[in-house]
Image (cartoon, rainbow, N blue to C red; front, side, top):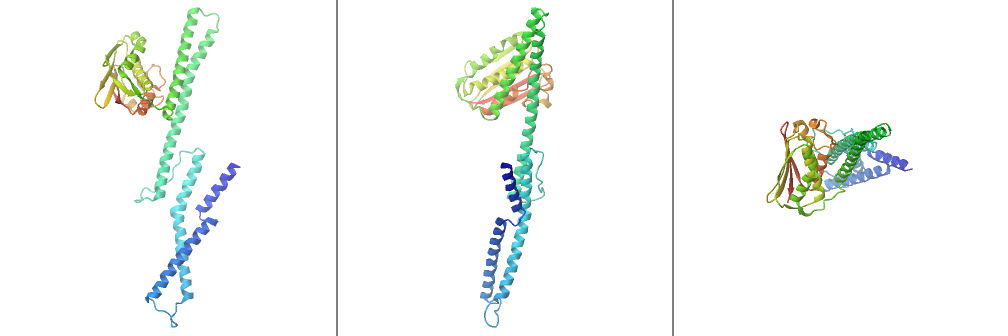
Length: 363
């Protein structure tokens, strides 16, 4: 029933737009005809009254002929109005309606043709331009959604396959305890990776849909950075990476401490991941009267110029990632958090010489 009602409404709109004999169309044109008839009659009366045109021998207006001519003029103006309305209103509205119907069916690849050579645009031209912009955004969002689903499926399938393979191998009674332990450790690693992926996806989704609103309060940023570095101690000790900290004793800041913690853990974790054994990672905190600057610099493989434009995209892993594990959500999450906190992220990188990420926080 709902579809039937929608079709009837669409049919009515189409009939009105095509200037058919719908009652609303006839009534509107009748009003326009009466208006034009009255206006022309008043003009003719004033012309005769002013003496510009002489009256007949009896001294009266030639009523019959005057009314006939007035009706002809009013009909001509009404016909011109109908034609102009059809050209400048009816056809563009039909295009918009057709495009709307296609969008309802999920067709986002369309666009409404516009006259680019037109110097002065009317209201409908502006509406069509905005409609095309909306369609472009919908196409972009649809592409992102499709890529997102494909990437999520791939990223989830990989750890699941590892977990399934390990569990199946552990069912073999012939394997020794050491091998079984290796399978268990690999399974735990896969579960952690899957858990981290799901957590990042949920957090990123909430940020993008404005379901996470920063809870700003004052805390010591210096202490938070030191704790973030300590939490990654097992990584930099295992790779024998030198950690250089240029952090003042105290640095009070008013922001969301939980969201910022994700930023530091991601940036420091990435720096450690792409720094070779025996390398160096530097974490530096500076401040001025308006902003606080936190930079994380490494001497790893660096980021190519091609990758820099896409490094903050979801699921994008640069060509220099190599065999390093990652789901491509870390920097995307950092970027969204920075936006939510009115912060800015600056990137300096050179292939083979490392990268430097700087977060600019308002005080």
